[in-house]
Length: 74
Image (cartoon, rainbow, N blue to C red; front, top):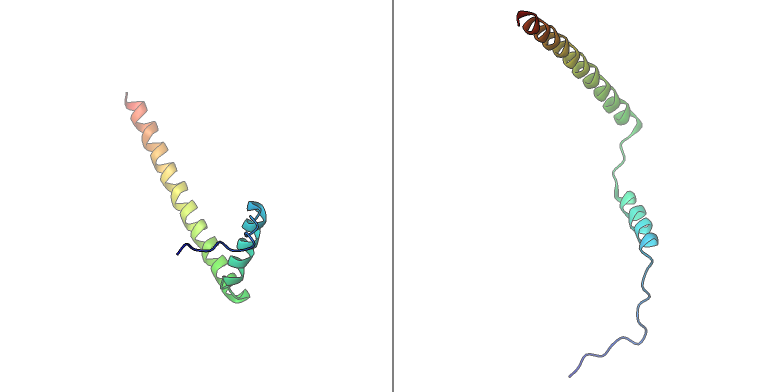
């Protein structure tokens, strides 16, 4: 026996409106951090940025001095 088609075909959704509807649905599922957690994580990120930028700045200085010394030998 053949399958019956539904009486009313489903309306094709606009891709943009579907995108926004799905985005809102996903954002409702997010476990948002508390203000205290966000503050702690911000301080951790800022600390890591300062440490890494200092490290990279020191390494840049060392390598630039090394390259200047090598060029002077030539």
